[in-house]
Image (cartoon, rainbow, N blue to C red; front, side, top):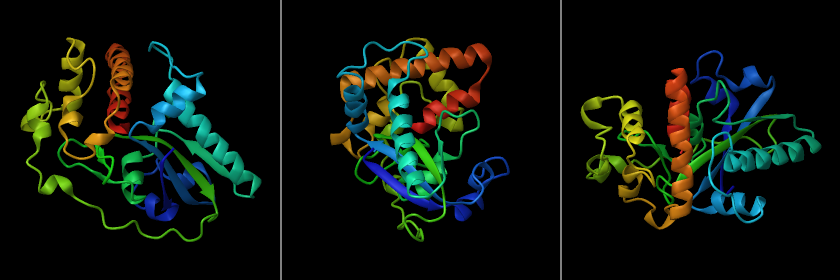
Length: 241
């Protein structure tokens, strides 16, 4: 993990509905640590943890997610040895926390008002939210307010909109559904043209093998979600990065 930030649990919970608050999941939680990867670091670490290669993608095989969870669990054990109870949350949980809100509050970037993706000042859209640690007490002291977020989309000419071959963001239509329909017809099999068109963080774009791997997984998720009508599950896949 090469990106991390901390959020005060009380401040976060004040923005969330019942059932999605940190203190409901870990009584006594005062701090939330958000863990993410920017650029190619997560892919490299996951490959190293799996003998140097992840092999071909296939349904129900999630080595990157498993690596991220294992890292978070290791950090949780370290905190517990120091006397701080903790709980690991991930975007793949059945009822996940609002990771986009957490990322913004932790200072990891801003959610684009155009494409709904987290944009980091250095890594641009090439960021993946991996896990959150709910921690009792304040192991890092009082958590301050995140620095004023940048708003790159306000002055951008928005090449991302023109780049989308599915027109997923046109006319306020359902971007997830339109994107999914395009993918099912074989489109964007090796990567997302919207993310590629973003002028931020181009030097951190995922390598070709990682993009293909990720997009194979998103296609698995689309097919599974359509079969069961689980659009919220599909939405989590698109929004985690």
